[in-house]
Image 1 (cartoon, each protein chain N blue to C red):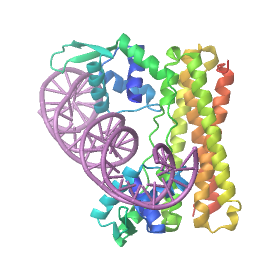
Image 2: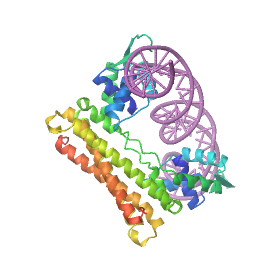
Image 3: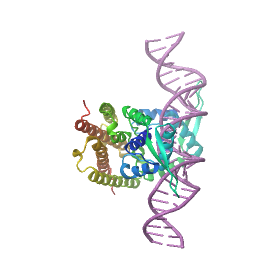
Image 4: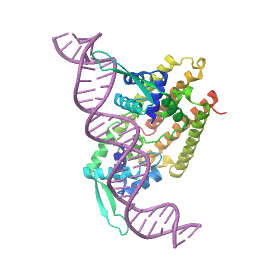
Length: 179
Length: 179
DNA sequence: GCAGCATATGCACATGGTTGCATACAATAA
DNA sequence: TTATTGTATGCAACCATGTGCATATGCTGC
């Protein structure tokens, strides 16, 4: 259901084809949401069947027609409802935790690789976050609240990533994972 | 694949029936991993077909037979391989983020409900974590490393939860979500 | 005496997501 | 010249997970 909501949000902002949405995900929304082109096309078709979006087929020569989707009032209602319904608490299910429970069988060398690899990914993520922040939100408080809102998600992402990194550093120090 | 690994880990620790595993999840592992009884029975059956576990059927009267599963050497190998392969970076896909991107359509009242509800859940989770820590890990450094390992996952859970709470508090202060 | 829970397993269906494959052409780079 | 990338859509199969239902009985508490 959440993918549907995300699609409705982005279509509300501006009508788009499946391909356009894919690009939006890849460009500005990758740290927030992601979906394969398959998932997007399928969901848009379903939403069309349900009347949540309408579409206009724009012919092109030499290429498949562009299907431009636009949110309908039914779609707006659906979105509104979703926004007003509190979300389920997210399920915790981290495979990494499982590895810690198998400590005895987990070779120290593999552990080092795992944790340092993860740490590097997290660092890269942080760099991305910082770049996005500088580019889009260099002065968030001069923005109106609705433009500023996405900045909050970025900030949370940053902090959670930082917490992860601190944790990894502590463990590698304590359990001697750096050989 | 991770559920399979988790099952292998817990079976390695001690042979068990599907039901036993379910109870282990509910008791000691809920904050780490969870799965419905359906998922467990189905996966155990599949693993049996693949030879990763063997089973002994213990008849009982008046009740379905107990099928006690035990890890095989093929299962051990599989687990070993899983432990040695670094995990994929976890996918970020938080529906809450989507709501922030729909700020304009998100009624302040719904936002308050959402965030304060979430905050409460997080507080409860923290309480649970602290209780587990006191009960199982009151003196982690006196434990051998392999017993202490699960404590690290608990610590990470705590810190991430705290980070979330701080973030919520900041937002509600800044954007005035507390009426 | 009966409701509800614990024990113990399982089928069937639905939803959400991934992966592989297919089509078709234009523009750009090697 | 050929290979790759970008535009644009879609089918089919599969994997992971969740939900509802079914079965059968013993034990515990009201």
